[in-house]
Length: 608
Image (cartoon, rainbow, N blue to C red; front, side, top):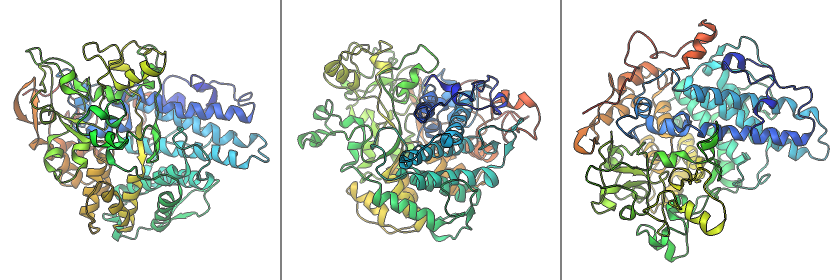
């Protein structure tokens, strides 16, 4: 992964980032088809570069920006509050996200441009799979980039124009995003790679095509309830793998159905088996999973049959180096119970709070999600740790906490095992640390199990999501009810309200809610649109501040509805990039950021 710059052709990255990553000699590399696999590994490695800072990742940023979660953490964690309040606390807040997006795009473009420099006679399937994966990753990075910043600089050739001006996301970039996923889906074959090995698959491309199409039609074209709409065809650019220049709703639905029926992915038997708290070292001792353990059923594991695309991690996380902690799932660390005490010696993450570990207390579940989720839905307690309730009152509201709710995301938070030492957080503290100690001779690279032993995949796409997208796109209940039956819930009829609720409950805490709200609201929705009002509704939720008293959550400036109306949910483009050319015809700041109205500026966390 360290061979980053070797793959980039001369491009506009000297504009996109002030550091030049484009001075490699492309005349002598890649020298063989095998070198393309190294380039592909480096392309996937960008996901770990993103992971180095969770507060600049699409999955964690959108999680805490939504009404699923609060920024929370400590009273000094201004950055997490700024992200969650649709504000900023520093000019460099999203610099790494911008940089990593364009590193990914450059690497994908390099592979696409170089693939036919070699003879693939007799290896056409291998060639098409590799090319399809590169198209998939380019589509993914442009999807993230446009959802983050809207109109951005874009190019699809090995070398970019200089300067490289921003293009219209709606008119120019999204057709390319959709084309990339179509190319990926058509070039790759089901079963061409080993499921869960970290590579993109045909099924994953079909699923992300659905996600990109739903966002494009909902947000930009404002189709509303797409199941009962008939959107105009999207004209796609010409490129390999695009066999039909017009993309329709029915064609996208067909791709999703193919993923459901033929990809090899499926729903795991029990919703709880998706999440690491059902692992074999923990489940027998955890009351919530003892019934599974008694039947010999344990966590389906990383890369399981429901995971269609994910970010993977390995035992190499370290605070040393520029990417070190990108190899550990820091989101688990961020989402653990805050590790300060309550002023009376009470500390979370000990034996009393088994099986959930401590961390930094960011991304706590917003209390409205708990209150509004029907108690008859078993996914509620499978997703949310109601710590005071589950721990029989032995949960401590620490004196440094802010926006604390006592509600935590079980899908992402750290998990312990009773074989671990609850008195020594540096030795085999998480269940991963216990497993490592029992099965290998390896040590935690940073010497700290509490901070570094987090290797659960970040799931970016799973089969349940694809099935729900199919129901939403077609206005039918068949796939939606399959998802419900897995949870032991009765069948329901299709309605827009029902499919919205089903996505909210099934996918809660996975970083998808914010963009669902955006696409259901449409661009320029204003302060009264669904997204703005759902975010503003957070002011009715209950939080704790510095460990005492209950308060209604309050916004850091003018309110969530106002901030959403001003920004449409877009983030600020890095000011350093804006000032590099100082020319709005090349790169223009998004509305609602760094202007004369100062509601975007968070100088400190809200006090109560």
